[in-house]
Length: 180
Image (tube, rainbow, N blue to C red):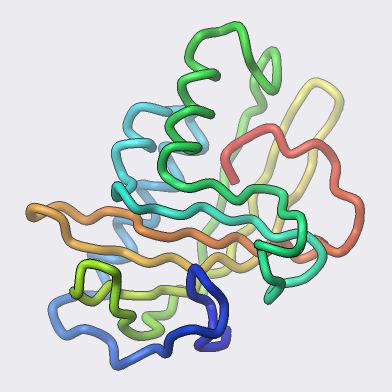
C-alpha cells in the first residue's frame, strides 16, 4: 500500500508507527469490528467510528480519486449513520433474510502514523481479508485489502478511516448488500 492512501489521495505522508500502539490491541480491534459487521450488530459497529470518519470502497482501481470517479461506497460519518438508521427501521433493507457472513483477516501490518485534522496522529494499518457470504441464492467469496486508521478517543479505540479495495473491483460486482 502506498503512502498516499489519505482521505484526499496524495496529500500527506505516513510517518513512523506511533509507539503507544501495540500489535495485539490493533488486531483485537480489527477482529471486533469484523465480528460486529458479520453479525449485523449495527449499534456496536456504528459506535466504533469517529465523528470525522470516512468509509470508502473504491470501484475501478485502488488509487482512484473518489471526487472524480464513482465508488461502491464513499461515506462520511453522517452518511454511515443515515445508512444504518435506514437499515434499523426494517423498511429499508438490502436483503431479506440477511446473509450469513464470516470474514478472515490476515497479513495485518502496522504501516505508520498519519496526522489527522485534530493535530494528533492516527495509526494506519493494512490487512488482507476474505469474506464468506452465504445467502439464499448461493455463496459468494469477497477478498481484498483494507486500510484502517485508528485513533484513541477518550481512552477508547475508534475507527477514523476504512478503505476496502476488493480484488476484483475493476469488474462488475454482484450486489454488495452487507457491511464490507
